[in-house]
Image (cartoon, rainbow, N blue to C red; front, top):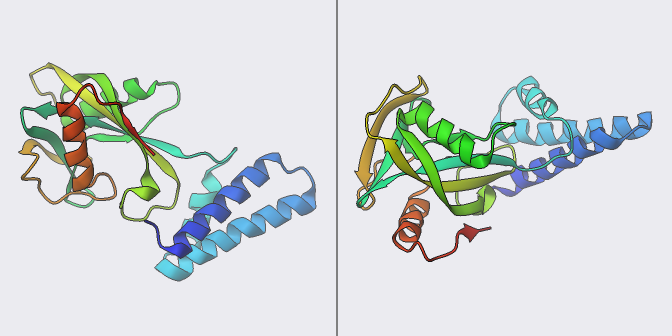
Length: 206
């Protein structure tokens, strides 16, 4: 759960972004720009980050504010799960990332798994669609939905993976390494394994 100050900042930023999309009156535009500035000031006050960094981050998003979509590929082999070691924090995660425009969610997760792990897979089932803010992740500046897809390896020969990943390995579900909790939590992996073991169960949501 986000701290209160971050929840306020995210809501203000979303209001400003949507308002700037539709406002035509110069006074309304100025008001929404001020709202966006207040959102960035909340974040900079609480984090100590440079104001220009946060202002640029918020200003880069345009159009009607909607949650971003983070897709994650879930590949099980028996009671083990495929994880990748993130170079940015040295911790492990399910392979995945932001969905790209022009791709379906399934196409995005197949691409992400290939890029991050080197395995060619096909998405077989949506296991869960979850609100990131309600899942115990480390705080983030934007709203996001996390879509977890079960994937089957179609080519057992592992190819090259991209430079954002240090290592690729399968780990026992009951013996997970330190996780990158901004991306995935231990509770999520355990729940995804239960959903994998019960294909008759519907996908989790919210």
